[in-house]
Image (tube, rainbow, N blue to C red; front, side, top):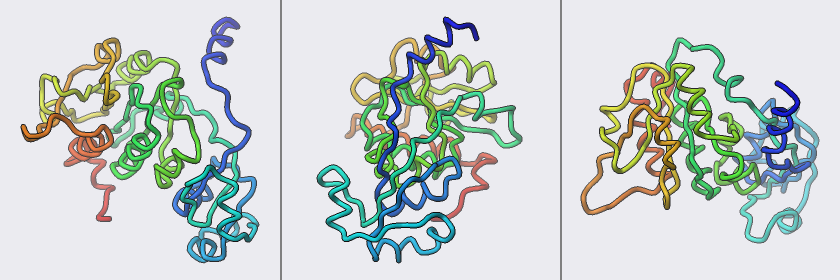
Length: 263
Protein backbone atom coordinates (compact mmCIF):
# COMPACT_ATOMS: atom_id res chain seq x y z
CA UNK A 1 0.00 0.00 0.00
CA UNK A 2 1.44 3.39 -0.94
CA UNK A 3 1.50 6.37 1.40
CA UNK A 4 -1.45 8.08 -0.31
CA UNK A 5 -3.71 5.04 0.03
CA UNK A 6 -2.64 4.45 3.62
CA UNK A 7 -3.47 8.05 4.53
CA UNK A 8 -6.87 7.82 2.84
CA UNK A 9 -7.69 4.60 4.64
CA UNK A 10 -6.72 5.96 8.04
CA UNK A 11 -8.75 9.14 7.51
CA UNK A 12 -11.82 7.12 6.56
CA UNK A 13 -12.15 5.33 9.91
CA UNK A 14 -13.94 7.07 12.74
CA UNK A 15 -12.02 7.74 15.97
CA UNK A 16 -12.10 4.90 18.48
CA UNK A 17 -12.82 5.62 22.17
CA UNK A 18 -10.09 4.76 24.70
CA UNK A 19 -12.55 2.57 26.59
CA UNK A 20 -16.25 1.78 26.81
CA UNK A 21 -18.66 0.46 29.42
CA UNK A 22 -20.32 -2.83 28.51
CA UNK A 23 -23.28 -3.52 30.78
CA UNK A 24 -25.84 -6.24 31.41
CA UNK A 25 -25.28 -9.88 32.37
CA UNK A 26 -25.15 -11.37 28.86
CA UNK A 27 -22.92 -8.67 27.31
CA UNK A 28 -20.50 -8.74 30.26
CA UNK A 29 -20.34 -12.54 30.25
CA UNK A 30 -19.64 -12.59 26.50
CA UNK A 31 -17.03 -9.84 26.75
CA UNK A 32 -15.18 -11.69 29.52
CA UNK A 33 -15.17 -14.88 27.42
CA UNK A 34 -13.89 -13.13 24.27
CA UNK A 35 -10.09 -13.52 23.95
CA UNK A 36 -9.98 -10.44 21.70
CA UNK A 37 -11.51 -8.22 24.39
CA UNK A 38 -9.13 -6.47 26.81
CA UNK A 39 -10.94 -5.81 30.10
CA UNK A 40 -9.91 -2.94 32.40
CA UNK A 41 -12.36 -2.84 35.30
CA UNK A 42 -15.28 -5.03 36.38
CA UNK A 43 -17.92 -3.79 38.82
CA UNK A 44 -20.72 -6.03 40.08
CA UNK A 45 -23.47 -6.17 42.63
CA UNK A 46 -23.54 -9.27 44.81
CA UNK A 47 -26.50 -10.61 42.90
CA UNK A 48 -24.80 -10.07 39.52
CA UNK A 49 -21.66 -11.82 40.76
CA UNK A 50 -23.78 -14.80 41.79
CA UNK A 51 -25.50 -14.82 38.37
CA UNK A 52 -22.20 -14.73 36.49
CA UNK A 53 -20.78 -17.49 38.68
CA UNK A 54 -18.23 -19.55 36.75
CA UNK A 55 -17.87 -16.79 34.14
CA UNK A 56 -15.73 -14.95 36.69
CA UNK A 57 -13.40 -17.85 37.52
CA UNK A 58 -9.85 -16.89 36.66
CA UNK A 59 -10.95 -13.91 34.55
CA UNK A 60 -10.12 -10.83 36.61
CA UNK A 61 -10.65 -9.22 39.99
CA UNK A 62 -13.92 -7.41 40.38
CA UNK A 63 -15.25 -4.61 42.56
CA UNK A 64 -18.41 -4.89 44.63
CA UNK A 65 -20.95 -2.05 44.44
CA UNK A 66 -24.61 -1.32 45.08
CA UNK A 67 -26.98 -1.12 42.11
CA UNK A 68 -27.41 2.67 42.30
CA UNK A 69 -23.62 3.18 42.26
CA UNK A 70 -23.36 0.97 39.17
CA UNK A 71 -26.11 2.98 37.48
CA UNK A 72 -24.28 6.26 38.01
CA UNK A 73 -21.50 5.05 35.71
CA UNK A 74 -23.91 4.76 32.78
CA UNK A 75 -26.37 6.93 30.83
CA UNK A 76 -29.74 7.37 32.58
CA UNK A 77 -32.12 4.48 32.00
CA UNK A 78 -29.43 1.90 31.17
CA UNK A 79 -30.58 -1.59 32.19
CA UNK A 80 -27.33 -2.87 33.69
CA UNK A 81 -28.59 -5.78 35.87
CA UNK A 82 -25.81 -4.95 38.34
CA UNK A 83 -22.94 -5.73 35.95
CA UNK A 84 -20.63 -3.28 34.16
CA UNK A 85 -17.28 -3.84 32.48
CA UNK A 86 -14.89 -1.11 31.37
CA UNK A 87 -12.97 -2.50 28.41
CA UNK A 88 -11.09 -1.59 25.26
CA UNK A 89 -12.98 -1.52 21.97
CA UNK A 90 -12.55 -4.70 19.97
CA UNK A 91 -9.60 -4.61 17.55
CA UNK A 92 -10.50 -3.64 14.02
CA UNK A 93 -10.82 -6.65 11.73
CA UNK A 94 -10.29 -6.89 8.00
CA UNK A 95 -12.84 -8.65 5.80
CA UNK A 96 -10.20 -10.74 4.04
CA UNK A 97 -8.65 -11.75 7.35
CA UNK A 98 -11.96 -12.99 8.69
CA UNK A 99 -13.00 -14.88 5.56
CA UNK A 100 -9.69 -16.52 4.69
CA UNK A 101 -9.69 -19.35 2.13
CA UNK A 102 -12.89 -21.15 1.19
CA UNK A 103 -14.03 -23.50 3.94
CA UNK A 104 -15.48 -27.01 3.67
CA UNK A 105 -18.77 -25.75 5.13
CA UNK A 106 -20.48 -22.98 3.10
CA UNK A 107 -20.26 -19.59 4.78
CA UNK A 108 -22.88 -16.90 5.18
CA UNK A 109 -21.93 -13.23 5.50
CA UNK A 110 -24.42 -10.49 6.39
CA UNK A 111 -23.96 -7.03 4.85
CA UNK A 112 -25.89 -4.07 6.31
CA UNK A 113 -26.25 -1.01 4.08
CA UNK A 114 -26.75 2.11 6.24
CA UNK A 115 -28.81 0.53 9.02
CA UNK A 116 -28.16 3.05 11.78
CA UNK A 117 -30.42 2.12 14.72
CA UNK A 118 -28.28 0.29 17.33
CA UNK A 119 -31.30 -1.63 18.61
CA UNK A 120 -32.05 -2.99 15.12
CA UNK A 121 -28.39 -3.80 14.52
CA UNK A 122 -28.14 -5.43 17.95
CA UNK A 123 -31.13 -7.65 17.17
CA UNK A 124 -29.58 -8.52 13.80
CA UNK A 125 -26.32 -9.49 15.51
CA UNK A 126 -28.24 -11.86 17.78
CA UNK A 127 -29.81 -13.54 14.73
CA UNK A 128 -26.40 -13.66 13.04
CA UNK A 129 -24.97 -15.67 15.93
CA UNK A 130 -28.07 -17.86 16.15
CA UNK A 131 -27.79 -18.88 12.48
CA UNK A 132 -24.02 -19.29 12.17
CA UNK A 133 -23.12 -16.13 10.23
CA UNK A 134 -19.36 -15.79 9.61
CA UNK A 135 -19.24 -11.98 9.74
CA UNK A 136 -21.45 -8.89 9.78
CA UNK A 137 -20.21 -6.09 7.50
CA UNK A 138 -21.27 -2.45 7.94
CA UNK A 139 -20.19 0.91 6.53
CA UNK A 140 -18.04 2.78 9.01
CA UNK A 141 -19.84 6.15 8.87
CA UNK A 142 -23.41 4.91 8.46
CA UNK A 143 -23.76 2.24 11.14
CA UNK A 144 -23.80 2.30 14.94
CA UNK A 145 -20.28 2.28 16.39
CA UNK A 146 -19.29 -0.22 19.01
CA UNK A 147 -20.87 0.97 22.26
CA UNK A 148 -22.52 -0.18 25.45
CA UNK A 149 -25.93 0.42 23.86
CA UNK A 150 -25.10 -1.79 20.87
CA UNK A 151 -23.58 -4.48 23.10
CA UNK A 152 -26.68 -4.51 25.32
CA UNK A 153 -29.05 -4.66 22.34
CA UNK A 154 -27.00 -7.54 20.94
CA UNK A 155 -27.18 -9.40 24.29
CA UNK A 156 -23.59 -10.63 23.98
CA UNK A 157 -23.58 -11.25 20.22
CA UNK A 158 -21.23 -8.31 19.56
CA UNK A 159 -18.46 -10.42 21.12
CA UNK A 160 -19.48 -13.60 19.27
CA UNK A 161 -19.47 -12.63 15.58
CA UNK A 162 -16.97 -10.36 13.76
CA UNK A 163 -18.49 -6.87 13.31
CA UNK A 164 -16.51 -5.42 10.42
CA UNK A 165 -16.56 -1.76 9.39
CA UNK A 166 -15.58 -0.97 5.81
CA UNK A 167 -15.22 2.33 4.00
CA UNK A 168 -17.28 1.29 0.98
CA UNK A 169 -20.03 -1.35 0.99
CA UNK A 170 -20.11 -1.69 -2.81
CA UNK A 171 -16.37 -2.40 -2.86
CA UNK A 172 -16.76 -4.95 -0.06
CA UNK A 173 -19.40 -6.73 -2.16
CA UNK A 174 -16.97 -6.79 -5.08
CA UNK A 175 -14.42 -8.47 -2.80
CA UNK A 176 -17.02 -11.01 -1.69
CA UNK A 177 -17.94 -11.72 -5.31
CA UNK A 178 -14.30 -12.21 -6.22
CA UNK A 179 -14.02 -14.67 -3.32
CA UNK A 180 -16.89 -16.73 -4.77
CA UNK A 181 -19.78 -15.50 -2.62
CA UNK A 182 -23.26 -15.49 -4.17
CA UNK A 183 -24.61 -12.03 -3.26
CA UNK A 184 -28.33 -11.76 -2.48
CA UNK A 185 -29.99 -8.35 -2.10
CA UNK A 186 -33.05 -8.60 0.13
CA UNK A 187 -35.71 -6.26 -1.31
CA UNK A 188 -39.48 -6.17 -1.60
CA UNK A 189 -39.23 -5.81 -5.39
CA UNK A 190 -36.74 -8.67 -5.80
CA UNK A 191 -37.16 -10.85 -8.86
CA UNK A 192 -37.08 -14.16 -6.98
CA UNK A 193 -38.26 -15.49 -3.65
CA UNK A 194 -35.49 -16.07 -1.10
CA UNK A 195 -35.82 -19.85 -1.48
CA UNK A 196 -35.33 -19.53 -5.24
CA UNK A 197 -32.38 -17.15 -4.88
CA UNK A 198 -30.30 -19.19 -2.44
CA UNK A 199 -27.16 -21.01 -3.55
CA UNK A 200 -25.32 -24.11 -2.37
CA UNK A 201 -21.95 -22.42 -1.72
CA UNK A 202 -20.86 -19.29 0.13
CA UNK A 203 -23.53 -16.56 0.29
CA UNK A 204 -23.71 -12.90 1.27
CA UNK A 205 -27.10 -11.52 2.32
CA UNK A 206 -27.42 -7.75 1.87
CA UNK A 207 -30.02 -5.67 3.76
CA UNK A 208 -30.78 -1.96 3.43
CA UNK A 209 -32.23 0.62 5.77
CA UNK A 210 -35.94 0.59 6.50
CA UNK A 211 -36.56 4.01 5.00
CA UNK A 212 -34.41 4.09 1.88
CA UNK A 213 -33.69 0.42 1.28
CA UNK A 214 -30.58 -0.59 -0.61
CA UNK A 215 -28.66 2.10 -2.45
CA UNK A 216 -28.41 1.70 -6.23
CA UNK A 217 -24.67 0.99 -6.36
CA UNK A 218 -24.99 -1.58 -3.59
CA UNK A 219 -27.89 -3.34 -5.32
CA UNK A 220 -25.96 -3.40 -8.59
CA UNK A 221 -23.10 -5.29 -6.91
CA UNK A 222 -25.45 -8.15 -5.99
CA UNK A 223 -26.08 -11.22 -8.14
CA UNK A 224 -29.82 -11.42 -7.49
CA UNK A 225 -32.62 -9.55 -5.72
CA UNK A 226 -34.84 -11.64 -3.46
CA UNK A 227 -38.02 -11.07 -1.47
CA UNK A 228 -39.60 -12.74 1.55
CA UNK A 229 -43.17 -13.80 0.72
CA UNK A 230 -45.55 -12.28 3.30
CA UNK A 231 -49.31 -11.81 3.61
CA UNK A 232 -50.98 -8.99 1.67
CA UNK A 233 -52.25 -7.41 4.88
CA UNK A 234 -48.70 -6.31 5.81
CA UNK A 235 -46.53 -4.23 3.50
CA UNK A 236 -43.14 -5.16 4.97
CA UNK A 237 -41.24 -6.48 7.97
CA UNK A 238 -39.02 -4.59 10.37
CA UNK A 239 -35.42 -4.98 9.14
CA UNK A 240 -34.32 -7.00 12.17
CA UNK A 241 -37.30 -9.35 11.75
CA UNK A 242 -36.58 -9.66 8.04
CA UNK A 243 -32.96 -10.51 8.83
CA UNK A 244 -33.99 -13.28 11.22
CA UNK A 245 -36.46 -14.81 8.75
CA UNK A 246 -33.97 -14.58 5.87
CA UNK A 247 -31.08 -16.07 7.83
CA UNK A 248 -33.26 -18.98 8.91
CA UNK A 249 -34.36 -19.56 5.31
CA UNK A 250 -30.79 -19.48 3.99
CA UNK A 251 -29.36 -21.71 6.73
CA UNK A 252 -32.19 -24.26 6.56
CA UNK A 253 -31.08 -27.48 4.94
CA UNK A 254 -27.47 -26.32 4.53
CA UNK A 255 -24.41 -28.06 5.92
CA UNK A 256 -23.93 -25.22 8.39
CA UNK A 257 -27.39 -25.89 9.85
CA UNK A 258 -26.06 -29.14 11.27
CA UNK A 259 -24.16 -27.08 13.82
CA UNK A 260 -27.37 -25.46 15.08
CA UNK A 261 -29.31 -26.82 18.04
CA UNK A 262 -32.58 -26.40 19.85
CA UNK A 263 -32.59 -23.30 22.14
